[in-house]
Amino acid sequence: MVVTTTTTDSSESIHSTFATRYVRTPLPRSIMHASPPPLPHHMHPNFVSVGWGDNAGEFDFSPTKKIVMRRTIIKIITDELMLDGNPRLNLASFVTTWMEPECDKLIMASINKNYVDMDEYPVTTELQNRCVNMIAHLFNAPIGDNDAAVGVGTVGSSEAIMLAGLAFKRKWQNKRKAKGKPYDKPNIVTGANVQVCWEKFARYFEVELKEVKLSEGFYVMDPVKAVEMVDENTICVAAILGSTLTGEFEDVKLLNELLTEKNKKTGWDIPIHVDAASGGFIAPFVYPDLEWDFRLPLVKSINVSGHKYGLVYAGVGWNIWRSKDDLPEELIFHINYLGADQPTFTLNFSKGSSQIIAQYYQLLRLGFEGYKNIIENCMENAKALKEGIERTGQFKIVSKDTGVPLVAFSLKDSSKFTVFEISESLRRFGWIVPAYTMPPDAEHIAVLRVVIREDFSWSLGERLVADIEKVLREMDEQVSRTTRIAHVEKVSEADGVVIKKSVREVQGEIAGYWKRLVDRKKTSGVC
Image 1 (cartoon, rainbow, N blue to C red):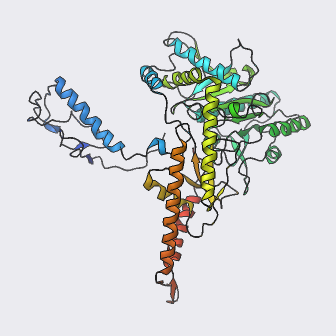
Image 2 (cartoon, rainbow, N blue to C red):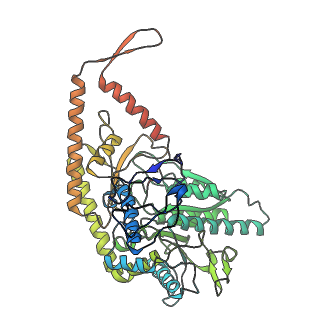
Image 3 (cartoon, one colour):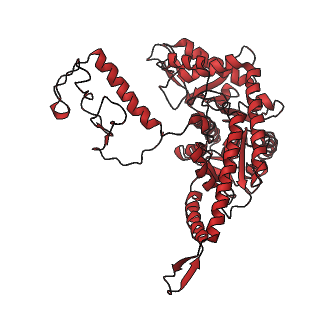
């Protein structure tokens, strides 16, 4: 959800003169119009309207008119949507932007099914349960081949994290109540690199978020510092498998070992949640020996985004629990007004079934080897892009080879121009490449980041590198020109003394001002 901040005039209209030859009457932009748009009589003799607006009368809803009206409205909307960015060139997002046409058909065929109507759509419910079991086995959950895994489909990892956090909070509260201890000050320990949804959980559900600060060259949570920050009020430690900033995996195994020792010394029972939104569909296929999942005893729940490297369009995530004991029964609702008992643990109720079905399609269609091949190809493309960026000689790579297939890089010398200017210049070529500063205490590091998805081929990577080189040349030439321009005079208001500054200095001051504004914003929300 995006909170609307734009103030619009209710009298403002959409002018469609250039959108279609059929409608010239403006339509209201922000309020619902009173009646269907009128069509010119000379073009559609079968269409008769007595009036429009306040004088609206009866309309002849003939087949011809209905078709033309539909096409007209579609044309108006698609014309505006042309100004959106191209999803395939949106290198800021981890979210899937391409699926096979066969799956597109499945999605459209199920788009009218409400996922929550389990009794009415039992097969859809069964497909969700199969997905949960497949993912649980992928994460090495301690269940047998014929056992039912404990998990739920969500609209994304944000909802999954909310549910996991609520489960940890309730279990911690129950233990504190049983011991007669205070239970009003829960906290979670994370790295400062966590996605903004963790801040949302903390604020919405009144849990203190204790963040391990970052440092230059180390952009993930330090397990040693994390364990030092836990106390008896810590409901869990959240580890990130695939930082949104650099794609790096945090050391969950070391965290498990250190936290196990801490629990033994203190008598606490602090668990681990793994936020594998990006890395959950990567690590099992290309790093099978990496221990980060339910093989580690303290890992009690894992979330993953099906709409990232699960290869499904936006709108699906998963949360898997180690066992039933890790999901408090009092959080599960049982409803029966739709026809039968339906256990549910979600923040949302109604939602479409299409993404669940699309996830099942991908799991069935690709299998383990299919996912492995796609992820390996993404990793190879990321490596090739990294080498191309390094060849420019102007960037330092800050992402790691092990992790999510992305390339994050900073300027070696930002005195002439910034990554923010490069990001803006690349828009001319259609590329959406985000620029952002790191969280505390590495705010002075600003980077560009390119996410490699399945639909990002190496031919696109070559074109991106060529466009980056073109932007760098243009900026170098601009710097060279401005240094030759006569100085600009600026009068000091304090004493009336004339101070001479170069055009570049003035431009630098302006750029610095805007960069400071950007730096004040939260950067861990990049997705």
